[in-house]
Image (tube, rainbow, N blue to C red; front, side):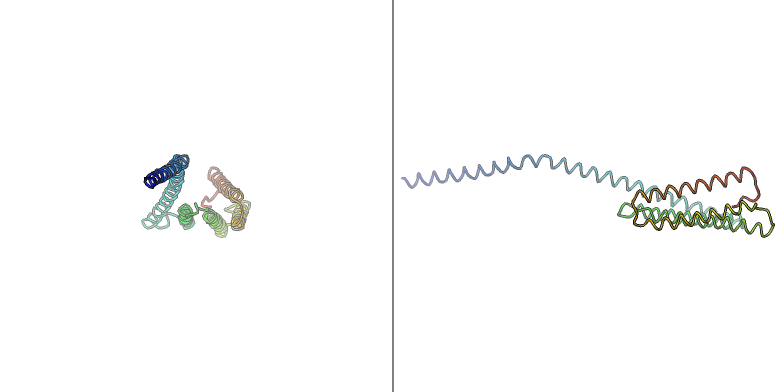
Length: 213
C-alpha cells in the first residue's frame, strides 16, 4: 500500500515539474517572441526602400544611356543622308556622351552602390577631348584665313584645354579620397562645364566669327 502511495506521489511530482518547466519556458520566451515579427518587418521595409532607390538609380542611368545612343544614331543617320551635316567634332562629343552614360550605368548597377568616380573621370576626359577639338578647329581656321579667330579667343581655348586636363589629373588622384572630396571635385567639373557653355553662348549671341568651337 505504501509503495502504491509513494508511486502516485512520485508521479504527481514528476508531472508537476514538467508542467512547471513548460510554463516557465513559455513565459521567458514571450517577451522576445512578440517583437520579432516587428523587427523583421522593419528590416524588410528598410531593405525594400534601399532596393527601390537602387532600382530608380539604375532606371535613370539606363534611360540616359538610351538617350545618348539615340542622339548619336540620329547624327550618324543625318551624315549618311547628307555628308558632313554633323561635324566630326560634334560626332566625337556624342560618342563621348555614350561612353560616359555607359560608365554611369555600370556604377549604378554595381553591388557596392555605385562609386561614380570612374564615370566622372570619363566625363572629365570627354571635356578634354571636346576642348582640344575646339582649339584645333580655331587654329585650323586661322591657318586657312589668318585673323578669322581673334588671338585672345584662341588663347582662351588653349587655357580651357589646360584646365580640363588638370581636372582629369585631380580626379584620378582622388581614388582613395573621402566622399566629400570626390563630391567637391565633381561640383568643380560641373562648374567648368557651365562656364564653357556660358562662354560659347556669349560668342553665339555676339556673332563673333566661326562658332563651331
